[in-house]
Amino acid sequence: MSALLSTPAAQRLGRFELRRVLGKGAQASVWLGFDPRLEREVAVKVITAGADVDPEHITHWLQEARSVSRLTHPNIVPVFEADVQDGRPYLVFEFVPGRTLAEHLRARGSLPPHEALALMLGVLDALQTAHAAGVVHRDLKPSNILIDGGGRARDGFRHRCAAE
Image 1 (cartoon, rainbow, N blue to C red):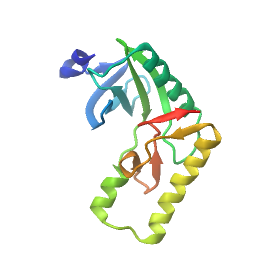
Image 2 (cartoon, helix red, strand yellow):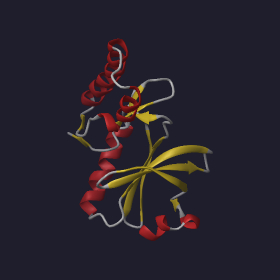
Image 3 (tube, one colour):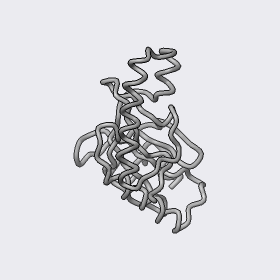
Image 4 (spheres, helix red, strand yellow):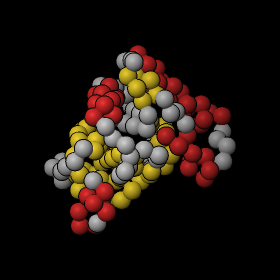
């Protein structure tokens, strides 16, 4: 897949066009993508080229996608699709324009208590919904929470989660 992502002319994964990297982690990168079938921007999470990907890891990745895709909550970013191409799994999410909570805090500094409370109540409500469905978020931190255009905290559970 590294060749798939290395040249501008070949930046496609399945039906999705990969436009630019939104973020990178140790095991995966998240791209701004475009779904030409539904004519909308999406976020596409792809395992980093060169990462050790075995069939068991792919099975686990897809199980996580199934678990998260069952969650419906205004503070949880929905999963639209999960697939594997050339032995590499990828997930497709709603694209949430905005910045992470970490970026928001760096730009604004400490938030007024009422604003911080409103953000965290949304996150906690989303976590309660996930836990009730048997999904545990294993990497909850400000850099994994998005703040959308309306100022609402949204968690994609897309960084590290596990079904119990």
